[in-house]
Amino acid sequence: DAGVIQSPRHEVTEMGQEVTLRCKPISGHDYLFWYRQTMMRGLELLIYFNNNVPIDDSGMPEDRFSAKMPNASFSTLKIQPSEPRDSAVYFCASSGMGRGLSGYTFGSGTRLTVV
Amino acid sequence: QQQVKQSPQSLIVQKGGISIINCAYENTAFDYFPWYQQFPGKGPALLIAIRPDVSEKKEGRFTISFNKSAKQFSLHIMDSQPGDSATYFCAAINQAGTALIFGKGTTLSVSS
Image 1 (tube, rainbow over the protein chains, first blue to last red):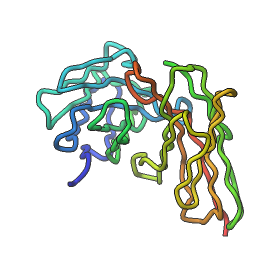
Image 2 (tube, rainbow over the protein chains, first blue to last red):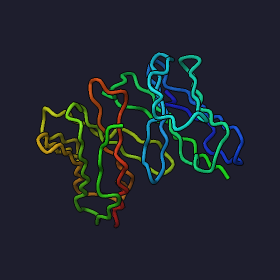
Image 3 (tube, one colour):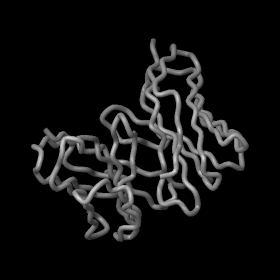
Image 4 (spheres, one colour):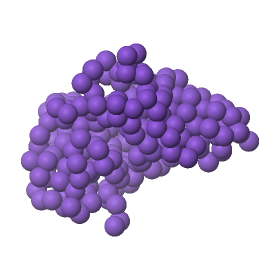
């Protein structure tokens, strides 16, 4: 298995532009999570899906952030418009058991820089 | 989000020494406590995990100690090696929880 695949690995964009981050979870995993990592706040849960349905999006910071999971093998996190404070590493993770008992498998992340 | 407090923020240990990272939690309903290890440029990876019905779990050089009454748990790395240099995150979740809640991480540097 190739693991959780995220793209792009790095993204540099100008303030005000739309940014789309992509994730392919591990086949057969029915939970998908989006986390954001910064030095100040550590790993923050943004949103998670179960069987492609958003379950909890209370961590999404603002209406500028949106996430979709149109099918079991693909999810996107979109920021529109982007702001410098959105600069962070965004991780996607998947799990076969939402309570983490089997461990989450994280992708390698997307490092977003908004200038 | 429910909090998991982790300390220290950074740690420097000599090769062969013991690294100790501590975490404290508030929610007594938490019932699963994993530790994740993250190397630069990579996502976190599950290292070891414990349930509150045991006080200690050991896997190789890595041990979790759990104190239910104090609501604290810690990671001990015995005979620390330069290859252990990474960021370590504690986490917690409960039966009604939505997803893992992570501590802010500890950056460990093992000097040779």
